[in-house]
Length: 625
Image 1 (cartoon, rainbow, N blue to C red):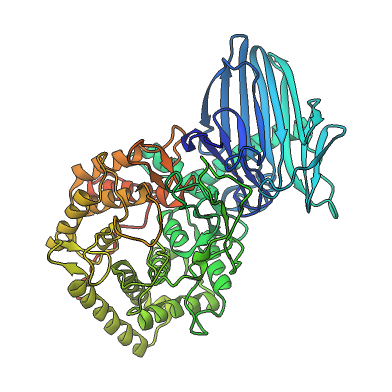
Image 2 (cartoon, one colour; image 1 turned 120 degrees about the vertical axis):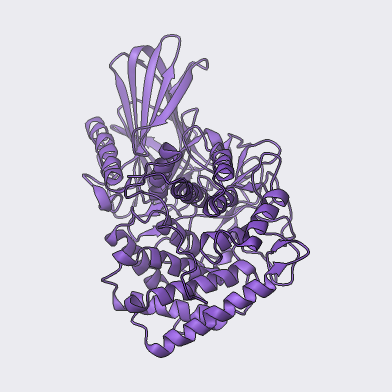
């Protein structure tokens, strides 16, 4: 059974694909050549699905690990009774990629360097690739400095100076290193029909590892100037969010994994290796300083291209796309994989792509509004796309939908969906000049914005519950109602808003103070954990409403759920405190960044050009309906 705790994994990324490395030195997740490709190393989801382990042979060895400054280059230091070993791991960036170009030409190669710095250390190496989610048990052949795994539509090639024994689809060795000696490894994906593997010599691996660290630092130097609460964790979250960006298109992943369960054995297992319009828009907004003109423009151009004529033809905006703009993300199960902790099914694809979710229009326009200063040169297709998105929100806001949590069943009149339609109209009106609106459109949008406000204030409030609820006519609470404060729909001193915050904090929290997203029926079997994003939302809402002591306590409680390497999962088991769900999760990191920024502003911290979140929530401008 694959049961290594999520907290014992590190993320590597080249902004094109990702790997997860365990604290034991094993790469147990690697998809090549893209984030959403089938795994080549997949022991994360099944013990027979492939791994690449490099660690001291002595089981008594102990280790510490860290990311090199402002990067996703991992350094693990092993201490044994006979010596000390340093292992450096990274996904290689393109040669001399710097700044805003980070990852745009990355080769999709995993690099590992093992360096003995003291004494003598026997090193155990196990390379067992299993392409296509473990379906292929490849034939391995050893050559001059390479081991080639053949099977299926592609080859996986390991370059190394180590002499490995090949048997039963694996390459293994125990190599003793003395002080000053090293081993290097490079894993690449090769098309056997048209390409030859790149010659990754030890010198090239050493130099590219150093160059990759410099590449990450060059990006961070341009983007990271935050100086507020939880500074180190916020800055690291910025790096993680960049690592979850597919640089070739500007799309942003929800997470680099599939089917890590929301509850062990719950059946709540989903593929998150795609771009949700809502998540990506909020992430870009949350990194608005990092989203320089080229990056912001690339993201909106990606969405305009991916959606193409959907809105013009009267269709809903698809809520999720492939990272290169693919539309058909049909879901299937992979029955030969047991799942993490036997939590089947493992799924590839996500049927949420066919759902109707109205909130995406508000997320999209809110991001555009935040980044409006960087969109002065908006091209005509992107401008038309944004105007059409507001138009759909205006014409269809009364419809039921599946909501932000993607309920699998009949649609409902979710409050959050109506709220985000209001946001779409509000932000569209504020960008009237940029969008080149005519007077008739402006008046129509103003009328609709007022109608949505009236509906939320009259039908979204439940007097018996004493709070805004999840959907019109319901008595169920939903943490998404906290967004009433965060998007500026209600002022911070509004009595009903303050009551809603208190009721959610009381009735949707676990004993540790972490927040569930809801407790009502969602049409799915099994239980889930508390939701980190919702806990960060609570901290954010408390900060906006001036309750800074409570905000800081809540923020620190949620931040304590980060791994020692500063990574967040989606959820937390309320009984054990263990991390659950796909990992690492962009939404959780985004929630931390936004909440920390809100607290800094509420406490009056001097933030010079911060990394995090949008400018202070726009609130309710004078005279707006």
